[in-house]
Length: 195
Image 1 (cartoon, rainbow, N blue to C red):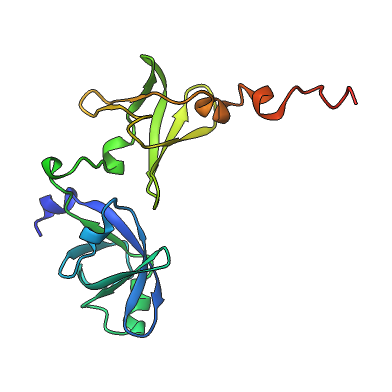
Image 2 (cartoon, helix red, strand yellow):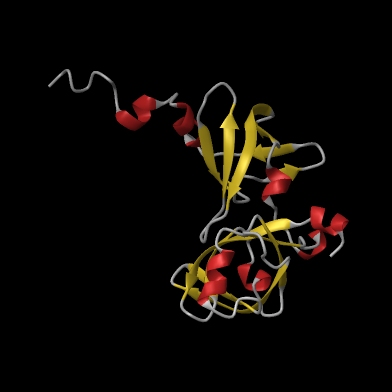
């Protein structure tokens, strides 16, 4: 892979602990499509691992064990080799935009977040989950971050060229992070004083 192509890679996983004696490892997944990214024959670029690791790993097998992805690589024939992979980051070439409507964290971080045309904060991270992804939004004027479900109903528009992400949050979603509507959550502060 050319150096220029390596700059365009996206992180798809972090290798965890070894699993069994056949060289398999657990991985923390950072992609919406783990079945495609970890299909047998897929080659992934290794970064941030121990010295002496191969530059690329070739997937030989992948399976789900409960909610954890367990992956075998051609370059990891046994548990001893698998142990050296722990902590390494795995990267891949991003899917072509026309093939997919998915967004990568790198595309979203630093986008200005607007509600009703007004700026409310900036995207700081994306957490991918098994059920749904969450945007981390640093809200203007407060130290807290809001976790916003990354679904079309709440995030109807993303204009990466303009650097803007539009939210249509349900009532109370952003207020939970700001603490502006504590009475709605905790009730009136003097409610216990009456008893």
